[in-house]
Image (cartoon, rainbow, N blue to C red; front, side, top):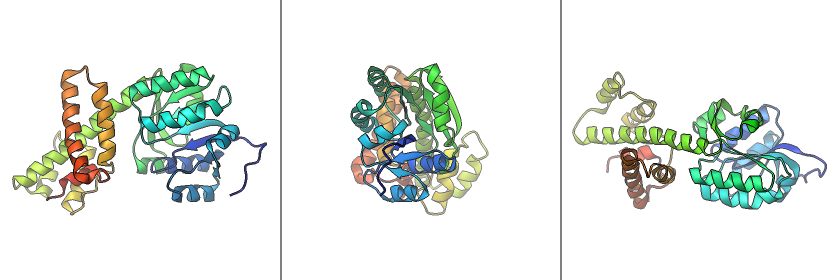
Length: 292
């Protein structure tokens, strides 16, 4: 690895070049952006991105010294809080942190306050879409930030996203994202439960899918899950049970004061906690369709 040129500044430091982040960095590089990345556990995406032109930072301190702005794409709020605790004091004043992590609503408010205390700009921008959309630059960004920060945040994210929407101040991004995930994961869960019931009741899956696709039960989740299940694969919905548990915990907390929606969220959480406790945390949620 070449040492960092002590006089050079990279436009973007990207932390979290994993399943989603790798595709995002690829698209930033294709757009001509200068990007510095940092390794965590898996070096494979790092090596691939360095070969494309990304620079590998030796540490958070190296990245902070040589990057104008930071994009985070981390697995959960706990990790985001830990990284920001180390990173924020190192950044130059007025630097922007664009946090694409799916966070708890309370977390982003805390991070925004911590950023303000050291004269930094914090933008939350959780994403819609998955690994394929990240690779194709077709993500959606759900932004919560000060109005004055939106233009720069949009410029930083534009190579990765097909749609970037400001939903309001910090807090509204996480709130909107969690409600969106409630809808998406809830729909996927109902598809799995309906197909499980169909199997147990002797209903032919192929005919069921053909008929359901023509009615109001048709959905992207049905199209992802059913054809592969009919063909004998149960990996149609590429989202792990462990991640579903994490999101449903955040969603349940958000909806705690909303009796009906909260009860549904807690039911979904219980279903996936049971699956996680059965050792399925790394399996995709559609794996629950696999017959015993």
